[in-house]
Image (cartoon, rainbow, N blue to C red; front, side, top):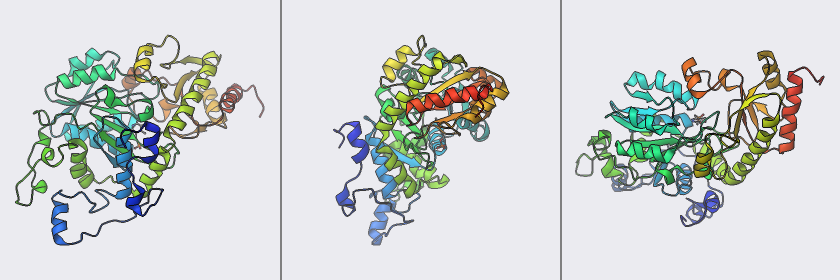
Amino acid sequence: MSSFAFDTLKVKAGYSPMEHKGAVSVPIYQTTSYELGDSYRADRLFAFEEDDPIYTRLSNPTVDVLERRVTALHAGAAGSIALASGMAAVTYALLNAAGKGGRILTTVRLYGGTVDSFEQIFSEYGIEIDIVENPDDANEFAEKMRPDTRAVFLETLTNPFCTIPDIEKIADIAHENGAALIVDNTAATPYLLNPFAFGADVVVYSATKALSGHGNVIAGIVVESGKFDYGAGKHPQFTKPLWFLRDAQNNKRNILEIFPDIPFTGRIRALHLNYLGAALSPFDAYLVLIGLETLSERVQKQVANARAVREYLEKSEHVAWLRHPESEGSPYGDLVKKYFPRGAGSLVSFGFLGTEEERRKFLASTEVFSYQANIGDARSLIINPAQTTHVELTERQCELVGLSEDTIRLSLGLEDPRDLVADLARAFEKAYGRSED
Ligand SMILES: *Cc1c(COP(=O)(O)O)cnc(C)c1O
């Protein structure tokens, strides 16, 4: 399968109908547990010698197809683990990399919930988070590396301004310091960017967004290259012998012995998914699989719609500013060419020119754009991030992100671009009280 192109893999990879009574559409295995057969087989299953499912919290055949398919969509990936949400994917990946007493080096150009989880959760458990204030300067990553920095965490295409970190350079810096590079590739999707091609070790997604793409499911996934050496000394959590991983002769084993090809997602499955429990339901995995079938077609159209709307806004007298990596004069021009030749995503953010009252009217006046906190949906969405999705950010964090009160974020969907542009034009008129309807 792996020799096929992306568009073939997204509808076929990881599934063989003849192993499932010929069912063409992936069956939903709605079962909690699985017949163990005889006790000898049970011994093998519980010693990780056979990988058939035991209990759906740990694995499920429908979820398994999703994991295999997402792995296949990333050249250079060795394995994946699907989880109940994007937040579970981010949190489990960072907990797994940090272990006890580790540090994570990151930026504040992240999903609002991720930033707040550092303060509210990670700090409670002694995991230190260091912040690079200017992620456009890769040298700051090198300067902020500490002996116990176990991972660097980045978003590949940030929300709401679509800034782009120099992933390859930052991967080199992380690796020179023995740290893994974990990236959240949610806004980019594997169609626009395969971070493994530029040195990422782990890629996480909120599959809630464009990966599934229809605004009807909450899901997350962690993908790994299998190439990072977690046995080199910096990540003792991977080499610690665990009783629970013992073999049939009761010898304790460590994660690297049990999962030599997929140590990162293997450890998440054995520990975080097993004991913290954010399992993806088979039905939700099925919804993500259906969404994935049209990933390229949707993202292509969304990128084209984002361009059409951006061109309209760049000329609009109602726009105070518009920052986008594909705009003329953007400092990210070279990084777009290197990392996003197919387009830098489907988000467009701009400054609304007017009073707060007019901005509120604008948000209430769109009919095609719907006002909601999500991205990557088939429908076009509008929101005021400073007051909603990024409300957790402190003043200093907003300053670092460049997020101002007047920011409006659009996530482009699949509608006709003429209707989208006309909708914004009408909403501007209504906001300024120049239209009666
Ligand atoms: C939405 C989002 C998340 C959180 O995902 P959920 O599926 O909502 O839990 C994490 N990272 C990014 C970049 C997101 O957009």
